[in-house]
Length: 449
Image 1 (cartoon, rainbow, N blue to C red):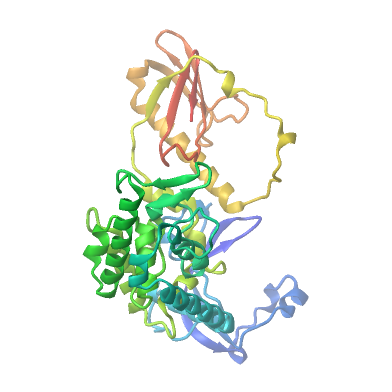
Image 2 (image 1 turned 45 degrees about the vertical axis):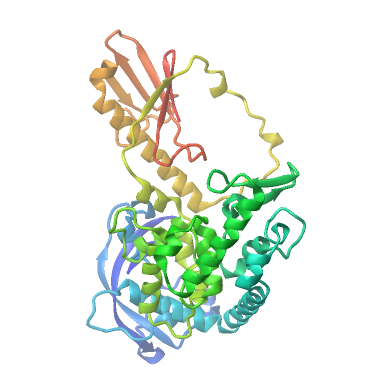
């Protein structure tokens, strides 16, 4: 177990292990001399059971959350006193399954009434959906009973995406995930071609047949048939859950499934493994936990609950960087105009108010550092190609030339005695793949985006 200290340190400070659980109050060690604000401390609710830790290491130096690898990320999972049930006291550390067990137990015990109420409402909605859209009714339904885009909130697609959002969210992708939808802008039906026929009636007939095939495959746990279906991943996997809610997890994001497998020590071992196979491995992992009164829906609800760290990790772009990190080639392009780089922005026109987001700021800082590292690595390996005679790295804090006021990040002189200035901008723009760095060269300046 690792302890992270907030402001002003913002670093990992101690490494410990659990040596005893369920320690009663009367056996607690008197540590009152370490309490800074006794009144505030005593005003907080306290548990009847506590955990005793053994200090293994006081971590020296600056070890921040940015320095934590994915395997390290699994360690600083917070265990409150209430989360502990049974631990082998001879064990030096908790396994990922033990950590999930204690976290789930704490979450379930503390939110029992609310969880049961919401799960009852979800199941009631699913039952209503299944009665409305039997296989026979699906095959016989008309196009407007299926598509999104019309005003009706009773169409098949509207039910799957919106009315049943609590059964797992599939928002984010476009309406093309349904194969066909109604565009109010064009006042016509849009079809995902060439996957489906251009004729709307032919396309819809095929889509209805595919939906029924997926329903049958889900009932028979035929993953190969679900995988081979032309329906989009999110759509067909939500259908699988809705029509067989006990044998599938309502987690539909390909990215989240892959991340969870890594977090839970089950990285990809098969090249080109289907998302259905990954979902099945995640489902089997969930079943192996033997969590009390935990349906697949409840496990999903636990994972995405805002009060535990899994949702935070899944939304943390540092994990994206780790998963997608690969040494993609750096592309050099020539441009002739610098005007777009030095446009004065009128911030008074901004409609939104800036709000501090520590996770995003930390992630952006990490992206900037990695961008600088990529560029410096490029220069170091291409000195001959660029004809570099001397180079200064103003952006690196550990460089003898470090200088925040230099006006650029890197400066170098080539064999023609010409000086080049480099400004590095690492972005997460939608049109740029994560991890890529683009050079744009103009006169005596590189603009690196």
